[in-house]
Length: 181
Image 1 (cartoon, rainbow, N blue to C red):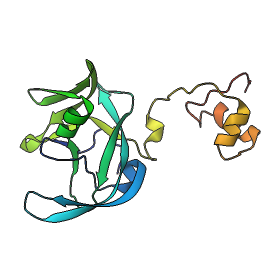
Image 2 (cartoon, rainbow, N blue to C red):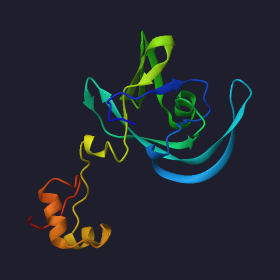
Image 3 (cartoon, rainbow, N blue to C red):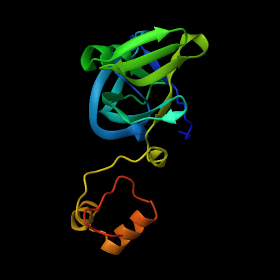
């Protein structure tokens, strides 16, 4: 996986689940063994289920992370598939198609888009949040917590190390209550 701003996740109206072959994409994961019947009659298996974080890019600007849940890890797949019907039936996502662009929205808010390329396959505009791309996302602010609480949550790192990491912008979303850094 490269840190490209466009990845090949095909929007698929026939897929029963969202299914990538990449284990590194998952932010939550548990093993499973689920049979998947391919259109050619072949049966392959999902070996894990979890969620992935997708960062949409709209008009060149990265947006808030969208978490796709109940995603199947299927190593034998050659492509990454996004189940459009799963999103519409189970999550209330509205899909509109105009020309070569599919727009995915919920409650009137645009979540992400997909652009049709060669062979009329629509690819999501954005990238998957992996460890390699975590630094590309904008920070999400947390509720202010004490330095002691952050010390506990970060595996008991020394207070000075946490302060130094914060000063050097190595931690995003870390808000320390009533502490000067």
